[in-house]
Amino acid sequence: MGLPRRTTALVLLTFLLGGLVAVPAAAATAFKVLQMNLCNSGIAGCYQDGRAVDEAVTMIQRRLPDVVSVNEVCLSDLPRLTAAVGAGAGYRFAFVRNRSTGSDYQCTAGRGAYGSGIIVKEGIASGGTGTYAAQDGGNEIRAWACALGAVRGFTACTTHLSTTGTTALAQCRELVPTTVLSFDPTASPTTRHVVVGDLNLRYSPGSATNAQDCVPSGWFRKGDGDVQHVIARTLTFVSTQEYAMYRTDHPAFVVNYTF
Figure 1: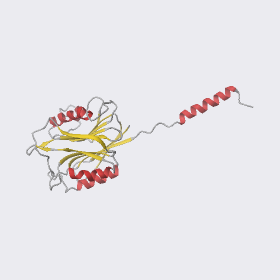
Figure 2 (figure 1 turned 45 degrees about the horizontal axis):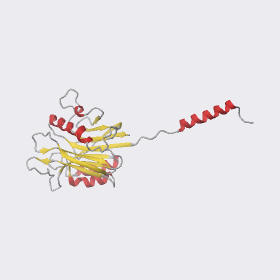
Figure 3 (figure 1 turned 135 degrees about the vertical axis):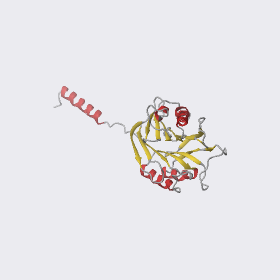
């Protein structure tokens, strides 16, 4: 005999509800950003004969980031750092200009131009570099570099801002959001962006040079408690970590997101 009509309906409903409950939610995609200042110009007192690059390679291999920002490096350091990120990775370099000579600032011992690099694991579709309109009276003309990811279409930028707080804040506001958004070909409000670097600004509510004052509406900032920060849009924050580095004067700073 078949089941009564009402019982059959209940069995069917239970089956359907069970099926709905059993459908797994789509897994979030992890997205990791690594920031390091390597003090590798050869001029500053924290320089340790290039060994910070070896330490950075190890840090990259252990943390497996999607995006790496490195400040105070030489152009000749970038191929090795990029290879550590991945076989398909690409980079853009922010060349710091020398005010006295009008040419690129140089690392010591013929190691090439000095500045900051942004490395993207998935490769780079396009990118650009530039210097700020706002500059302090020092010899270094501060710069930025941005890259558009080749696969997922996010923008990642690096910079190392002025040691004069008011100038650093003005530079940060030049970069975020106008310059960053100029690398988004879709002009979409949902495009992901990360701005990473040594901003020479601290989170200091009430201060005239508070790092939070260069974070536009719709963006958010995570910092290492000192001068390294990531300013992001359209990503879900998960956690931060700091890792000691012994060949430079800054820790490695990691921010984990999902999307």
